[in-house]
Structures are given as structure tokens and as C-alpha cells.
Image (cartoon, rainbow, N blue to C red; front, side):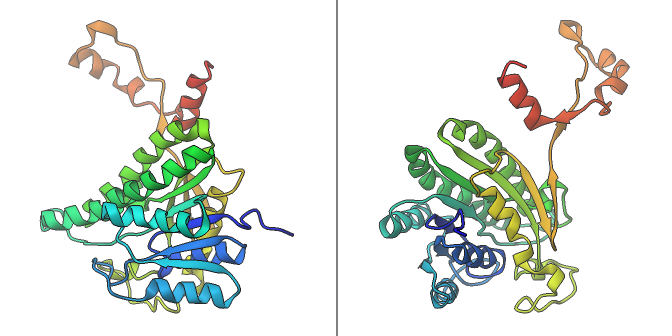
Length: 298
């Protein structure tokens, strides 16, 4: 049986290890041509390793087709080169998985603004830069599948990760807009909120030590990958957030209630008088579904 990913050109950032590597190996196993991007180096930034080359070698040894790119996603020219390499080598780009990231964990009081900037640059700007380059190709060909890697830290919060959490929440807003802009050109974009044992999670303060080269089976990065493949499939939705960890999958969503109409006479007093109605979520609905209904005139 031919896989639906056979011959698709897939770009995966931060694919030298962990989640990105798991995604790259599975796409390649299913016949995709893969651009393995990884700057190398530590989870705090910087790069000089051959991590991308090793993943490419593993794919090729298994009969797959892949190339390496070692550019930084947070550099505009570097981000553009990732997509350029895909087009120059394979002729196009069909799927983009934005996975690259770093951590600089500290409580906000102790966090330096350099720690803030570098995390925002890699996660949010890096995702935007690579996606912008891929968007032009996808829009022209009327086809594209994009995954942005968010996090429970952004959706639900996590102590000591104000920079990381803010960047990961920004992914959701970015996705929401591009889901609208890409709909007419068959470009679908979704967010992944993953959980797995990786080099990044191993650095989070308070986490027990773990061998990321041989993680516990229940925390294997490969158990997240099925959700990524679904988000990149022909039948993929758009504008959704999927959570995946240890073989457990769920969807997160933002909900909105009907609220109350106070009109031009609204005041602090009338707001407080109607607080129970304003905060009543019993009739709330998924914001994405509500937006779709409103756009269709329903």
C-alpha cells in the first residue's frame, strides 16, 4: 500500500534529535523526502554538531531520501535557506514542521532580557521566518501542511518559563490567523503541544534525571509523531491544537460564552451587576467552531 506521504517534501526544523528526529524518521519511512534542519549544539543555543548529518545518514541507510541543513531558524537568511534547499533539491515543499527550540528557564524576576529575547527569537521568530519562506511556495501551488510546535507551558503555564510559555502561546495566535489566510489555497496549519523525554525537557529544573538517548518507552518522542502525521495528512483540519504524550492524544481549545450586551450605558457598576452571566461558561462553545459558523453566516 502506497503511503499518502510518498514523494512529499517535508521540512522539519530542529530534527537532529528528540521529537524532530522522530518525526523525520517516520516521514522518511513512509516515503517522504525530508529536509533535516538542525543547528546543533546545546539546548541553550549555539551550534557546531553534526546532528543533522547523523539523522540524514540514518534515513539514507534505511533507503530513504534526505538532506541536511544546519542554518539557524532565528536568522532570516538562514531560515530562508532551509526552504531554498528543499526547493533546490526536491523541487518544492509540501509539509513544514516547525520544531526547533531552546530553553532558558528562570523565574521571571531572575530572568535577563537576553534570556527573554533569545527564546522568543528562536521559537516565535524562527517559526515565522521559516513559515514565511514556505508560505510563498505553498500559496503558489495551492497546497501546504504546517505544524507549529506549541507547549503545555504556553497553553496552561509552567513556573519558570515566562519566555518559553509566551512564545508557545504566540504559536496559537499565529496559527489562528494563518488558518484563515491559507484556507482558500488549501494550506492547513495546526499546533502540536507535545510531551516526551528529550534533551530540552531533561534541562527543566526539578525534573528527575533521564537518559534521553534511551528514554522510558512511555516517554518516547515517537509516541508524539502520530499526531504530527495526522496534522500533515490530506484530511488534516486547520486551526486546531493537538496534545500528545506517551501515546495519549487530546485536543485543546479556547472557548467563548454568549456573554451579555450592556450597550452604550455600560459602566463598572452594570458590569459587576452582570458578572455571573459574563463569567457563566455553561453555554460556551469552541472559538474555532464559532468563527467558522459566523463566517458561513450561521
